[in-house]
Image (cartoon, rainbow, N blue to C red):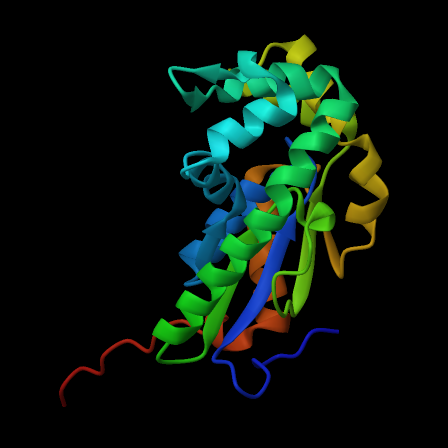
Length: 221
């Protein structure tokens, strides 16, 4: 069970929110942010990483020159390749994941250095179980949902058609057992408010300082 307060030497509890695509981890993280948590988005950090000097050339060396457009990494071309070829995905992960872990560790150090009171730092990372360790983690939360529901949500979002949604969901199948080993698994098989309530209950149990509402100002006599 995670500690209710940050261990000695830290002001912030460090949580990871993970889970398969379409399960609702971004909604859970948004609720944590609304409660006051500071969020590190591993996907955003990964996109920034691909723009660093030298990375486009390194990605092209790993995957071939067709993944570049105008000298930059074409993320759509990369996705089309790696979702069709698991070996290409392995090569990409071997290149990106160690550097991504370093970026996440750096972001957590920055949040810790800036913290002036106890709080919560949350790393949203679908690929958490594939990454090298990036520092202390007090709680790993997986948000999960049945496969058909996840595919339906992805298709309804307009980001993918049904076929592309199934391909992306299928690509994460090897991680499903890892997601189940998280410290806490939140089942998101209901509506958005159900998940928000589950997140608030988790915060009340595991990070109670964050869940306390602000005391309203007292009126004069």
